[in-house]
Image 1 (cartoon, rainbow, N blue to C red):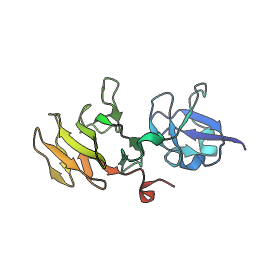
Image 2: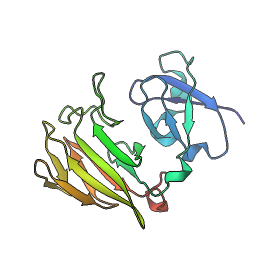
Image 3: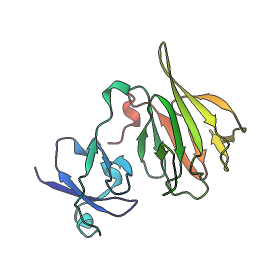
Image 4: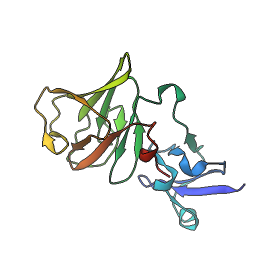
Length: 181
């Protein structure tokens, strides 16, 4: 087994890690900008060796927590970036130095730094997802239709949210069809 070289698509930091079985299906977290995505989203191979930046920070191969397999995930359709949801409140917003969102997904200037909240609520038969409009400066669309200020809506796996000009899809991590290969 050798060393794998990749480049973060956000900050262009060169990253490397020791090859492990199944690494192609793992998520990588950039230690510099904390961008998380499947290894396939990162640029690899010889192109990665030409990237700028020192490779002095440890690259994290992240496995999803097994205890929350049915909590779900969101996938940014334009980049295939995946972010895992956690039980409770998940504030989603634009990636910005001054942003305080739990999940930062895009540099889309039409997206607020705190755009929307997804509450993952434990029910008897699993989890339910509530889309909560949090009075951001920009609108939220659910399956192509704008939602109203202050709305709290139940959303399901497969629903598409539009935040600014960025589409994200709520997916089940248990569904093989939603995993990146």
